[in-house]
Length: 510
Image 1: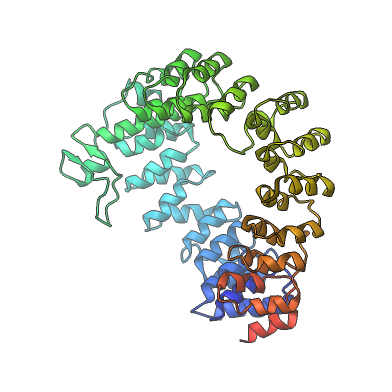
Image 2: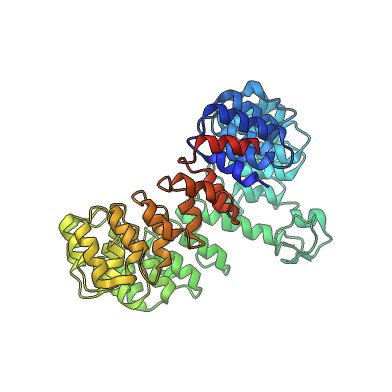
């Protein structure tokens, strides 16, 4: 089978226009492998309208992708025959307005439900969807409509599922859904619509046709849906802080967790949430950018657990001395933290001089360090610090070689990831004995890799597909890789821009 090779050709940026035409014809005509080939071709930026229309006619998924990429014209689509494609064109604002009215009356509930989530619908279409006989369509509209009058009306809808959608809609503050003031109780929910109550849905329900959410329950008061309404309202940023704050003592962990995400509560309420008995609530509050320095310091000193400490470390305004304390007490790992990303040059220089290597490692994750500071970290005696700074652009060949000489295999992969690593150094890293597999995988995709550096990469199963697509490979090696037992390697070789055009043509004739 050559399907993977044809898909590789479809990925090849050097494919001549005449061969691209033949590949499109193959995709349209081939029933067995045409769908996969058409999918690969739809990613190309050079299709043009004629080829795009041919591929769209062959495959619905491809047509939707081409519509979103701006390569499909509304004149080429029948909205009644291909409503999903019509929805994609509506999303892009290139479909006639009448299509929305047509789709609002479509017999497929899924089409109407999807339409209800789209912004900018004409008011008459919104009204049609608000009166839809299927509650799923109305609930979707309640979640997404930007019409305040419609959102307010749906928040008082007699069906609890519609209210659930309205509870997270920012068009109207869902205060009444929290307090219940002026709001008649809901008359039904999805559970009592379908089951004899009292009923609690099995989270592991084996029925393939069941649409109830896991744990959905109703004993006459639509209990699970009412809980979800309150949770959504607690999370909704349009809910006034005072209304949301009334839920801070709620027995539900999920509601308190939702409150911990908010950006508008008082520091006193954040403090309650930050010392909640549930770890997840505490960790969410600890990472909330709205909490102030006093609470950050109290949490850091309180020993709330590693998850809370890691959330604090990711806080964008955590004081650097607190961050140093957290790095010493908790495994954070080599990652660019928000506070380090926004640190001033003076702050970075101070942190880079910390006695604790774990703090210096955090600074080394920045990729825009001043040259003097970058070079100082590259000369650090700690291998973890050096590993973090090794991929930093601008490091000279001399410094990269010094790093390898000092730390050996511990840093090879990160040196190989440096975009400025020169070809001769990559060749030496690739020949390291024993091989450092992570380094080979970095070299396989490196822009400076030579054929000599890529050759050892072909011996590693994970590096081989990346190396197979590298244009520095000799053409004869690329051609040999087309017959590789691993289809991913063959596809990468077929996508290699250095593949001879004659071989591309031969693949198309096979």
